[in-house]
Length: 271
Image (cartoon, rainbow, N blue to C red; front, side, top):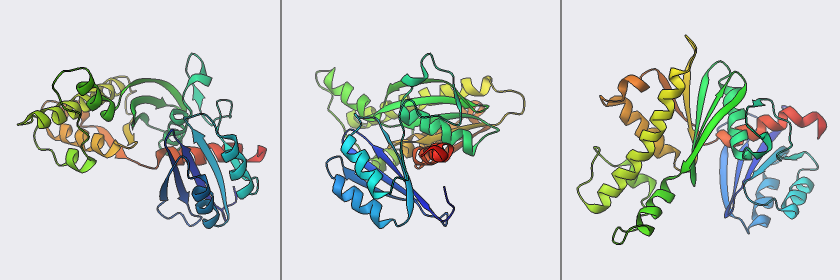
């Protein structure tokens, strides 16, 4: 990709389209979000970004019309990442094609930005994924329900517990480890359960690191800020301080987009 060009990364989800623009000057990326049906608005925004290359990942069914429209707007300088797209990292998975494209992209970004570290990529979205990336390879991972799914499950599988939909601000403002009301108890319990789970994965990753190998927790996703803050609180507390004290905790909301850009660069001679 020419250094004179910027780059746009499109994350096509089931209900939203997310556009991340990296300008050629290397400034902080800009991000826009659209309804999945607002393809014309997305295309207009891509056109307004000027001379750019682009790539797209989709966790939903690939929309052929959107792919062809983006290819036209970008004058062919566009890569839709598929299960068969060559990657700049190795993948240790029973069937590499079955590893989600979003997980591949974040693993590529981790390997590119932290090549000498043992990384745990924590993507806190609808599902929570914790993926181990080291020595230029996706090594293993785990998947469990994300925050919103846990809140909904408590309501749907009990008779009286309410369905809470707290904002990130409300969750970030929580103090202590226990709630003084039903709502507070649910919020503390859900966040504590998820962050404890992540901390356990980090402790296991650190235990498997080679002597002197840095361990990095790369946190991303829609609920990533809540998870990163929870991990930092645990680091300052007594009971998990030892397990987390040498682990760098990095919150990066642009990790997926950076991975799409790195995959594009790996394949640009074939585009």
